[in-house]
Image (cartoon, rainbow, N blue to C red):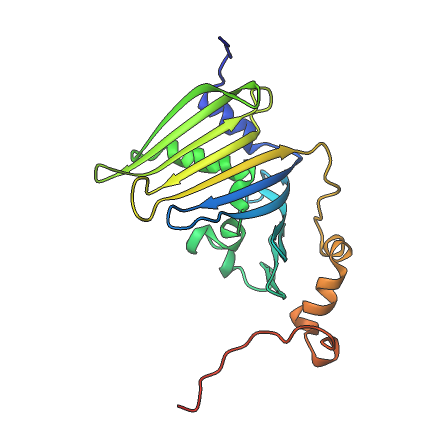
Length: 250
């Protein structure tokens, strides 16, 4: 038998939202009943809460790997850089603020970035939104995990009387940082999908890049070879041909 003095949901949200700094290695596994093989990403997260930033709750760097493919997303101070598929995309509020607007899908490019929702600051926002949404039922309890007691926050979303999502967050009882998140979408249906996210918190993942100069220093080859402003033929010898599509003559 074990006993844990549970934190309240508002205090959990506050602690997650103010995480500073934060770093973790994450294994992100997606499974579906119609396939035998899980899709597994290896991810490294780093973030720093930024209460004064109205666009995002934190500056962050997300490095991910899927097999032989890798990429990253970096956000700080109204600037977002996203590298994947041998392409570096940039968004800057100083150039054009429209992609960052909350009215955009996902709340803007900085909030809709792949895996941004895994960061504790974004989890805090997700839990706060659930708390205010009558479609959700949320409970805080405790569960044995990894040989120790963890805080368990469970949520259920119902639409029209049908359960469309069940989500469980297992949190460290001392820090409230995530240990595991399990998401069941469309349970017991042909489109059922399970996502299991396992976290290993890091004491130090290196300095979080919070300027373009720091980001270039971290990924010099990406900026040298794949930045649109210097994406010229002189930079491409020996590199894979960039993907493109054109209509056929017919």
